[in-house]
Image 1 (cartoon, helix red, strand yellow):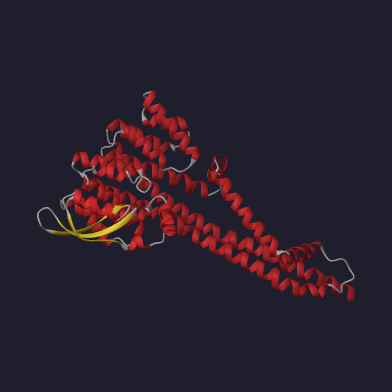
Image 2 (image 1 turned 90 degrees about the vertical axis):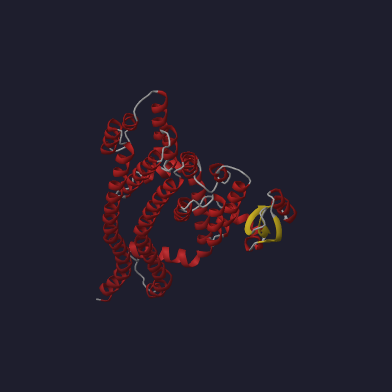
Amino acid sequence: MTIFAYRALGASGNAEKGTLNAPNLNEALSILRARDIYPIEVKPTEASGLSQKAARVVLRRTGLSVSRLAAFARQFATLAGATVPYDQALGMILEQTPDLRFKSVLSDVRSRIMEGAYLADAFAAQGRYFPPMMINLIRSGEASGNLDRIMNRLADYYSEMHRLQTRVAASLVYPAFMMLFSLAVVIFMLTNIIPKITVLFENFNATLPLPTRILIAVSELITGYWWALLPALIVAVWGLLRFLRTGRGALLKDRLMLSLPYWRNVQRQLLMQRFTQTLATLLSSGVEMKNALSISRDVMENRIYLAAMDRVIFDVQNKGLSVSMALRRTALFPEDVVQMVAIGEETATLPQMLEHVATRIAQEMSATMEAATALIEPVMILVMGLVVGFIVMSILLPMLQLNQLVR
């Protein structure tokens, strides 16, 4: 599909311009004439200037970032609240969007709306980019006439998700930098410093200490066989990533993430926050419990919790259990969360209770990540000190041995 920009005269004689998706120019002209629009100029946009190979790469990427979804929901909510027709609102957003991929997606959505499709159906046709939660809420808002309010709620939701992602990523930047810097220092010492010092030990008649022999062997391995180690490392990383994409590998990774000290607390809090925030947003927007639980299940992204949510959904739909009772039976949800859900069910304030829980968990998660980050720094310094200490000891031991022989 190619994005065409057009200038034309409408049925009333007014000039208008916009974009549409079509396989070729003739098809684009046919679409315009079918809408009683008389084209003046029709030409491919800059997005169509991409090579076919580049276009395939762009379109192969799935999903949109939460920051992009938040910005779009906020823009669309503002325009919908001002009673701007949907196709015109999307056209205005298209003009302000620098992302060519997103521009192509929105252009297709707009074309479908102009052809008479419902708004939710037009978004559902691009379901690989828009999550089910957004599509369901758009359908609910379109039917109830509260689309602007629901889109604002969606914008708040995705903005909060973006803040959480940013917070988690920021907490990992410093440990990652420390690890890479420490690794670079060790490799530099093994490849540049140790070989020069090793020459001094070659004239020793005595047997070198074990730490020194180990250090020399590692240095010779890296300097002499780096050409084999580098491809082996690349293959090992590639194989690990392939394994983690399998069902068994993904399950093993998810179990590991819930077992690591400190990080398991962050992981569980992140899952709980996503679940409660998503379920609160859906229920507040009028989505029925059955669909709300199914959509909330998909945001957890951990196979252990996904399997638990399958049991929750089954218990609620087929056994008639309350949500709180079904959550308690999994033994994976904290008791305080279960109790807040039970209170919300009893008082008919479940969305508000879930919103309160999500806010509290977000605050707790922030404190947990700060504590974990503060602990990582001394641990990394300790590990680096042990490695450097081993290298220094391996160098000093032969020198001390040489002094004893001289005496």
